[in-house]
Amino acid sequence: MFGNRTKHTGDGRGPSSILVIDRPDLPDGTAMWRIARDSGVLDLNSSYAYLLWTRDFAETSVVARMGTEVVGFVSGYLRPNAPTTLFVWQVAVDARHRGKGVAGAMLEGLIDRAYARGARFLETTITPANEPSVRLFTSLARAFGVGLEYSPLFPSELFPHGHEAEDLYRLGPWPS
Ligand SMILES: CC(C)(COP(=O)(O)OP(=O)(O)OC[C@H]1O[C@@H](n2cnc3c(N)ncnc32)[C@H](O)[C@@H]1OP(=O)(O)O)[C@@H](O)C(=O)NCCC(=O)NCCS
Image 1 (spheres, rainbow, N blue to C red):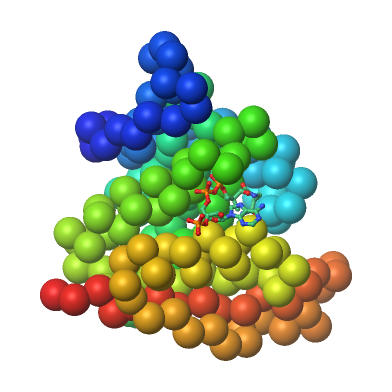
Image 2: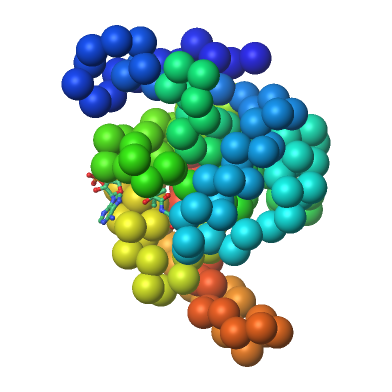
């Protein structure tokens, strides 16, 4: 459990404004699915996939809690063939809590965890039209003072049901 990373957001009145970056537990898979669904932007995986994620990839994923509510999540894993690279699969923040640094705080918390497990690079994919996500990872690279490169990864024609291309963003290296 790594629930000791906290940040104050909002108006600072009351415990609900305290953000806790935590390791996901099994029941959090339901909230992760709901937040992904409500984003209207992310590819929605099955509810089973999010539950499985909280069981098998909890160490490389985080949720953001305000009080008893999950307000955001990041799902990630260390690449099996390149375990010094943390791959960030999905990042989402409940619409009511955006613009307060929640995504940044989750990613910083996750990077700390992954660094302790040997990760020195972070990868993610972003569709070219997703400006908030481009800004989020650009800002993250700047905050940590690490490099950022991007290149094509999955062209749209590889997706069977119509989907924008996904570009690979690679941040790092974090110094050992
Ligand atoms: C993208 C998303 C996760 C950002 O969450 P957030 O908690 O609002 O982000 P933060 O407040 O931590 O902002 C982090 C940085 O991103 C920038 N940013 C966030 N949302 C932005 C937006 N809509 N437009 C422009 N920049 C934005 C912020 O300005 C900030 O940069 P700064 O540090 O240079 O000021 C959120 O908008 C979301 O859930 N979107 C839907 C799902 C999605 O697109 N996920 C990303 C693809 S996996």
